[in-house]
Figure (spheres, rainbow, N blue to C red):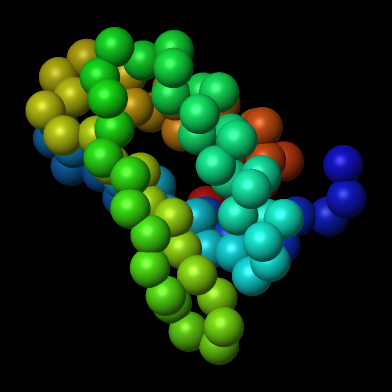
Length: 90
């Protein structure tokens, strides 16, 4: 896989977790959407997903899990990051 320029940011609290993925190109956006579709299907909770502008021409897709008592979202986030070739979050 080519070097990934998608930047990941993760936040979590009790029963809540969020993964934000910042991208620049339409190809990166498609990679993110494909990874979310593939990996979130394995979770019993349906995530809230939304997007928006960041800065310097970057955009972001955010995936949130609310009321995640069993912390299934964390495993999904790990799979998404692995699928995208991202080694660390900021």
